[in-house]
View 1 (cartoon, rainbow, N blue to C red):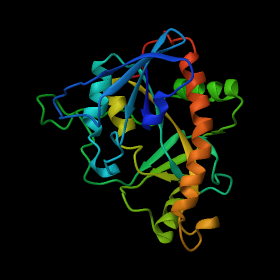
View 2: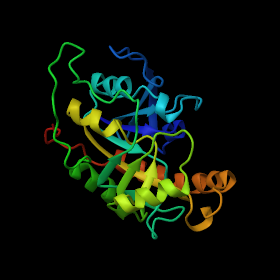
View 3: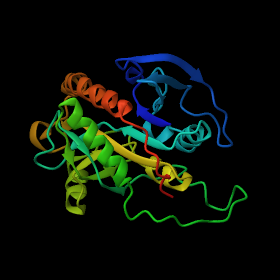
Length: 255
């Protein structure tokens, strides 16, 4: 089964039927909320609101381990993450859609692994050379093409801790490190999915220039972010609907 992690509005997909809610308990506490499962074109798809419903969990307060564990428990094998971001690269301006292929993790204080030796399992060191499933990235890009929406193929996502937005100096540092966009929720989701053997990839709607760049040279406008988010998420919903309608992959998930 596929899953989408993102906003609660994504349960309003065209042709989504028979939606039910699953409340899942995990050894790591409660997930962000119930998982909604519906039928789209005869296929099951699950939705998890990352920040809760209503939006109440700051990025550093999300129980990422419980979220990913709950989806695994429900039989999810592939996860499409919707991760709102700020654009750093010149061509990643507001309203762009990016399917990243790399991550740099700047977060701290988050529970970021199942394999630290504290839960009865041995310490494991997963390969994370390519943090996103390339096969799933191809699915997302193909879904965008089917929906008539253009996306950028590739980019390095810098994950900042939040919940505050970044300073101009911090964005300058991220750019120097090779980051093309910045967000606050991409890690440890991607690493936890890899530990659980779930394929994971993201589509990142760019809702503002990152601090110190473009229209955000002196200040980031929350009003502009809200306007851009509303417009760009209509396009995201179209892509998710096309993604949900694709034939199920039959190959085994990546470890």
